[in-house]
Length: 166
Image (cartoon, rainbow, N blue to C red; front, side, top):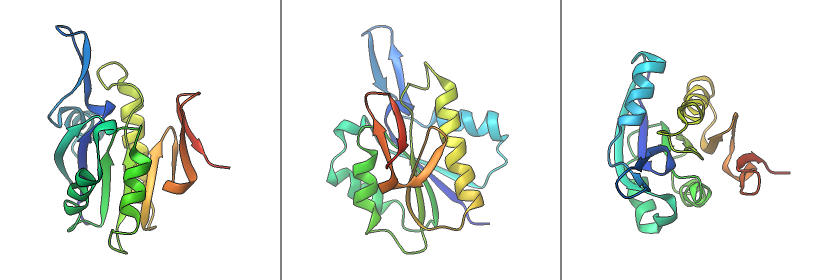
C-alpha cells in the first residue's frame, strides 16, 4: 500500500482563537491533523504528514501553488488541507499539472478546528475514505459529505456550505 501524503497549507482547519489579540490565527504546525489521525484512526494509516505555507487561503497565490505542486511529486494519493475561500483556485491550478496517476483531494473546514472539531474530522475522514476506496485519478474537493471533481462542487457563501454544481 502506497503512503498517502497529507499536505497541510493551513486555512481555517488550522485556525485557533487567540485570547490576547481577540483574533483567529493560523497555527504553524500539524497538531490538529496529528490529533485526528491519533484519536480517530488510532495511527492505523500509512501517512506522511507535511506542513507548508500555513496561510489563510485568501493569502495563497500562484507562487504558493507552485510550492504545493512541488511537494506532490512522489505520491499518488494526496489530501491537501486548504482554506475554503480559494481551494477551487488551487484545484484548478493543479488539475493540468499533476501526474496522470495522481489523485488529490482538497479539504478544509468552514469553522476553526479549535471551535468545531466535528466538521474538520468529518471533512478529513471523507477525503481519506475516498482515497482508500476509489481508483479515480484527478483533482477533487471533499467537503460536507461530498467528494466531487473540483469543477462539480462549489462553496455557497450564502449558505456557508459546499454543494454540487447543477
